[in-house]
Length: 321
Image (cartoon, rainbow, N blue to C red):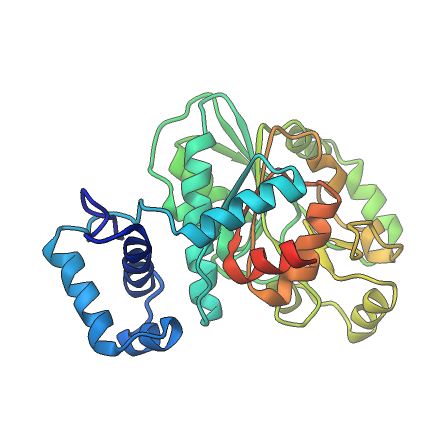
């Protein structure tokens, strides 16, 4: 990772911010020097010189600690617009997988700062959250409990509900309580029967009393990991869109204003209800890429979370909308 040197590179503040952005794109965003030059309107020679200067001045160490001015402005704007306690905005990169990674790493850094022994920590699933968990420093929290806040998916991916929760428990040196259930049920009878099962009901109740919850969200474009991991029919997807759904939060589908839509899937999802997040002290949504802008905006409008980690393009879209 990268950090600024004693003076954050030499030069005036605008130059320092430019240098920090070049270093971020190169060392964290994994862009080539030519890609950075094209993005920032610089020559490749200039980019190469900045990177060389960063090495020479000892600026390349652990992380970029010098905030990017544009990101800071967006963070403050989002906090004011949506009443958020904390916002982290990272630069936008073109590669979707890289974007998930850098958002996940930023979410891990944010989570690191709010974890305390004795908490109940709830977690969802997905690549972004998997990256966030792997970012944490191992420790021994003997009085902490990790709990999954949603049922499992039908296919393992390394970022499944159980896997993310178990990895978080391993990193924190504590035990994991997870929901031994599918995420969606085919009929009301099987859903109601399992919901009354004491072990499952106990985990859900524990999740509702979490001190910290880390979640992501999914859209309806077909790019969401949810659609590759849960066998939803095309008819169900079309119905969700027809009823105004823009995406899901912990498996529940919401409209553009963050309201739960009337659809059978929402009445048979084994997970915390989005409204259960409202009373949690620290709720972190880690999600980005502009195709998710409608669902991220919906979640913020409904005030289901109080911490946000996203990218510049989404942040700008949220402030325009």
